[in-house]
Image 1 (cartoon, protein in one colour):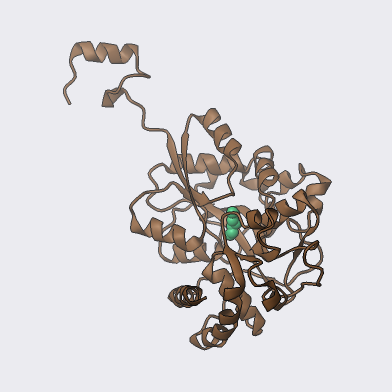
Image 2 (cartoon, helix red, strand yellow; image 1 turned 90 degrees about the horizontal axis):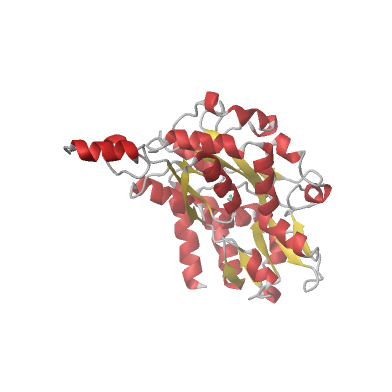
Length: 345
Ligand code: N2P
C-alpha cells in the first residue's frame, strides 16, 4: 500500500497507535493451548504485564482432544501441554520444534529426576510443567469401607455415586491393571478381556468429568471416584475427609510438559513463556493453585510444609506407578471400546 507523506508523518508521531504496516511492530502474542484448570490466570497476567505479550489461552480436557485440533490445522498454537505419551507421538510425527535452551536459562531449575525421561530422552522438545498421578478419592465420611483398589470403587453398592475422568486411555488403564496388565499392554486380546469388566463398571458412574472432577465430590453428588491427583489435593485442602488412595494394582504417573508445535507462529514468545514459568516464584504460584507434583526443584523450596505433606501432591511411600507410552493406532480401538460401552450404559 502506498503511503502519502502526511500519513507517514502521522505514523512517525504516533507510532504506537498507527496501523500502517511499515511502522507497526509484529503482533506480540502467544497462543497457548493447555489443559483446563492447570494455568493460573495470575501467571498469564504477570507474563503479559512484564513482556507486553498478549496470551490467548484455549483449554482442553484430554490429550486426544488437543491432538485432534492441532492436527486439523484450523488454528496454529505457540505452546501446547501434552502428556508423556503424546509428546512421544508428536516427536515421532515431527510436529514439535526443538527448544533453543540458550533462551530458557531457568531450565537449570528443573529437577534432574524429571529430565531426559523416555518420552524426550535428550530433553530436546519439552519443559516439564507438572507431574501427577491418577488415583482414587474417597469421601471417608460417606464411605467407611477401606477402599484400596479399582474393584473397591466400582461396586454395585456405589452405583450413581461415582465420578470418573472422561478419558478413554485412563479408563482402559484401570481395567488393564485389574487383569494384571500394564497400561501400555493394549493388544486386541487384552481389550477383549477387559470389555466385560468395563461393561460392569461404566454403568455405575454418575459423572464423567476431566475438567473439574472435584466439583461433584465437593457438592456431594458423588462419594468416590478416580481423578487427577491435583484435584484430589484440592479436595484434601478443603477437607481431609477426602482421602487419596493410589490403587494397589498400580497407577498412572503422568508428566505434562510445555512444547512448541513445529508450525508455531510466535516461537520466541513460547520460549519467553517457558523461561518465565520456570522462575521459582512463578512456578510456586502454579503449585498454589494447582497442587500437582512440582518438577521445579527451586520452586519446591518455596512451598510450605503443608503443601509438601499433601498426600495427593507428594505421595508418601513407594507406590507402584507407570507412565504411558505411545500406542499408535491402538488408541483408536481404546476410544471405540469406551465410547461404545458408555453409549450402552
Ligand atoms: C489438569 C489436568 C491434569 C492433567 N486439569 C492430566 N494429565
